[in-house]
Image 1 (cartoon, rainbow, N blue to C red):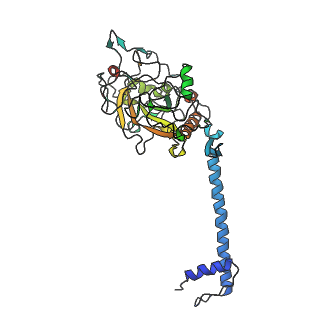
Image 2: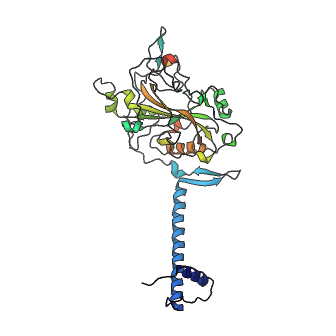
Image 3: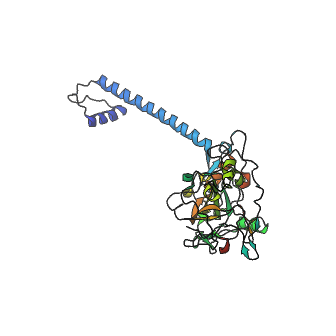
Length: 383
């Protein structure tokens, strides 16, 4: 069997490319014509590979351009700019969830009557490890990931500051910028919750402004608590899965909702409705980019590992420790840790929200935070 001298071939190819005469390898029976044919084949292969590489790169560039355009800001740093295709919604169609909220009989009401608690458990509560509320309840929170129980996310929205309280992570010692927050506070628009303790005003990733394209009145360095309401009664896996207000998505499937009021049906509000909550400080740093925040909380490394699970209610500034929510009990799964996330992650989430069939524009900005729930209104089933 003929054997090739690969070292000799490599040198021969190099000499041929430089125009040097090439002698046949000793004992190989090669001629100058054979060498010329060999080099011709090598050069043709190089050309073909170069053309193929350019074609592949062209396809990749076109694909990336459909989603984002890369630009440089005034400091020369690369920034992501979503183009119009990224926010294009699907064709208009029937939305069976639209207009379900408000639901008659579920108005806010007074939490106490003659100093006696008449409300069911409320949120957001203290989620510090080891904490438990004083309100006795028979409800049991979902402890598995929601998808394992047949629930899907039906909305995403966030609050200015944290509605929950986690000692050492987001508490009364936390700090942050005051620009946007102060303007909104003075205008009486938004109540701020607790801030994360990880804010560092001397580090530019917490202070350098970001050119927001899709989210409204957001601020680098600020703390936000993100909520992903989940429901067994959502239009899971369809174009109508995500809804604003979130109640439309939570209560969309009438058959499932009817089960909540049937004592013989094992489906209850607390095993069919749940909220994921995760607290972030926004930074201007692409090392903390997560592209799919619309789908649910981040579960990776320390994200989503130290979780508090309890039953509570819906939140928001229309409720406090005197006026309670009637939407209770539902499950809460809350990340006790505060995490850093890039501004571009939030902006990408807002772009994805714009691309939903239902109009989610009322959730593209931070909502106000409910004051921390009093121990008397917090469930005694924290895990």
